[in-house]
Image 1 (cartoon, helix red, strand yellow):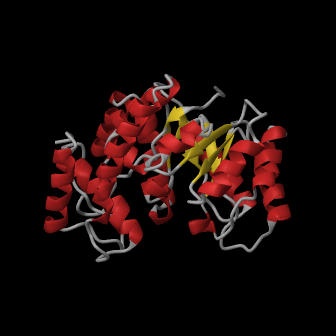
Image 2: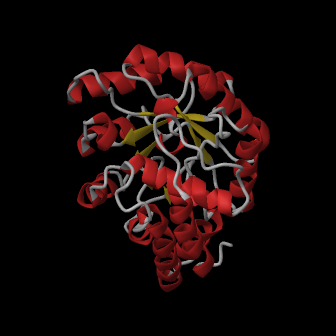
Length: 304
């Protein structure tokens, strides 16, 4: 295995009903994840609602998780900004707060191409002394990181890993094939419901938003795959696919982001891990009927 492998959930950000960051609940989430056997924590990712955070909130979240983690597992922290110099500045901030590695997307809002994206990653690598994960999330950046670019950056030691949230399973398999001769490069899927297939294809781990709710389930799935117990891995994946049904309970009432992240937060509230399922403004929290539907799904999967 390369330096990073296993289950590294993207940590959600609990808020009080008044919208402020709920640090006590954030510590509870961190403990819940560590107790579930996670291999690392991905901080300030999409599941953290990072685009909605102020700079002060970002710093508070990283420092709170770092304190609760106390060095137990690596902290992989998003340096989420629009362009190269802003990413470098953000990366230095989160490293000072305890990041063991940073996560970098392609530029967004700014319109670039593959050559400029390569320069972007190489410039960040030259400026910071921590491992870098390339985060392929075109639904947010509107740019798909090319397989040949990722393979080249991996061979040159510019990136240590890739978190693939592209939803492109063919592209993901091509990435695994293109990097199979680079044992130092970690390839992670962000796809909650096809993790067994990704691991069978050679992925080194998973960054599952649903892992906030059931980290132990993803740990069992990963461990089964490492033991070659693919039937056991499939059974655990099938159960997790049923748990994932929580994200469909709003039935189009809210945006996709509010539905998915709102379901994760609502599940954690039902489980007693966090105080409130409040979302970042302007996203609404899930309502009582949606909460009841989520509770039924959790109950049939042994989570409440």
